[in-house]
Image 1 (tube, rainbow, N blue to C red):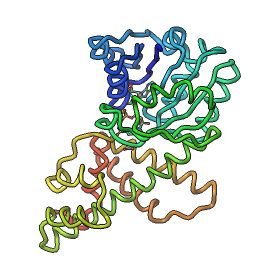
Image 2 (cartoon, rainbow, N blue to C red):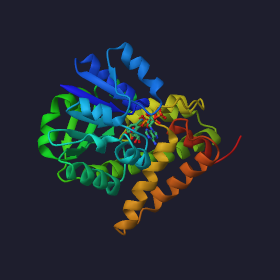
Image 3 (tube, rainbow, N blue to C red):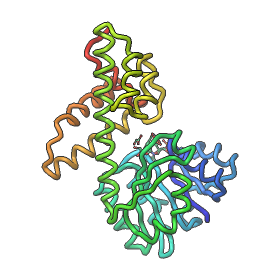
Length: 289
Ligand SMILES: NC(=O)C1=CN([C@@H]2O[C@H](COP(=O)(O)OP(=O)(O)OC[C@H]3O[C@@H](n4cnc5c(N)ncnc54)[C@H](OP(=O)(O)O)[C@@H]3O)[C@@H](O)[C@H]2O)C=CC1
Ligand SMILES: O=CC(=O)O
């Protein structure tokens, strides 16, 4: 099956490479077209516009930065809407808010296409190896049709029913992850400042009830003040912002997450937005050198 792929950032590049390696024919597009070159070397075709990709492919996936980018790819000139039609499917895998996802879904279905939202949990290493957790909702027939591709990209796919549910679930998951990272950062800072070896803290956490792949992956770099970008901090702050809006809408009080969001905002204002989200350590640790 020919799969279209829009957006070749950290995640899109890894996901589309994995699809190609597993034998899928993939046609790619990226706003900065030169980013397609590496994929072409692996056997991908290039579409000059999102519309050209949709015209060629039965199913097209989008993996772009945020709600504005997701809307632009669909609604702008040469966008997805110009070629979507009956028999074609569109899968929005970017992390966006449920309102944006519903707006895209309505536009796609009004032209006869089918729509699934399928944001993912996990980073580019999981994407490269097909170990993402996929949280999907929307057209069940499209979900079933795409299951071979979903099984290549992810280790498990959850189907949550109507459009909006997966977007909401992903925001809840990332609210928890973003808050956990700020708490780890406070702990690492406190350990260091009070004369403890932060490496010992990581070892102790790793064998106890709070062991988590997140800290195992990020902790050793954090304690050396290294923040190689896997999940850009600006995207984690976007997810906190969208998750807090979900809390506002549902009158759910989330003071801990709101405080964490302030830390990510501050980190962005300090120019740390393109580093990994673990760079929030730089603003959260309870002292300055
Ligand atoms: N990185 C991670 O670990 C994870 C990220 N996510 C989510 O996946 C999505 C992608 O993340 P990631 O790959 O890290 O992000 P990147 O910042 O690496 O890539 C962003 C992509 O979006 C494109 N883009 C940005 N603005 C526009 C626009 N206006 N129109 C068209 N394309 C645009 C960029 O194109 P260009 O190259 O031209 O700039 C690029 O392809 C985000 O929603 C993120 O929250 C989910 C799970 C994990
Ligand atoms: O959305 C980010 C992730 O790591 O999951």
